[in-house]
Length: 115
View (cartoon, rainbow, N blue to C red):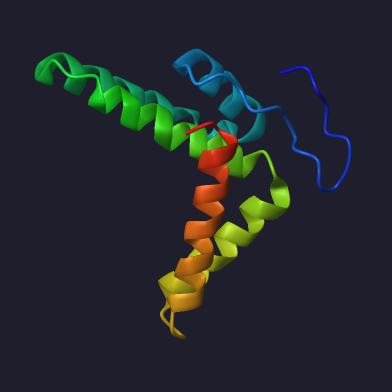
């Protein structure tokens, strides 16, 4: 993750590898306030994986945080997502278009992350 932010449409950081350590490092750089949530989610995923003897909780953790990083590394995309989520949360208007755009943002981010 050595590439620097080069312009308004360039990502802040390259997409990290899909490992807990790489995702943690990315979150530390682009959204440090979210580190406690990532740590808690990883702890819960690890505990659930051990209890269920399944990797599904860890896969869900990686998917969730990879999409988060893919969105947050593009400030304009992250800002648009926050605005759309605010529109849906307020309930002031029909949320259909906002929800569809949120899905598109998430799908684009998942594709960028290689998911």
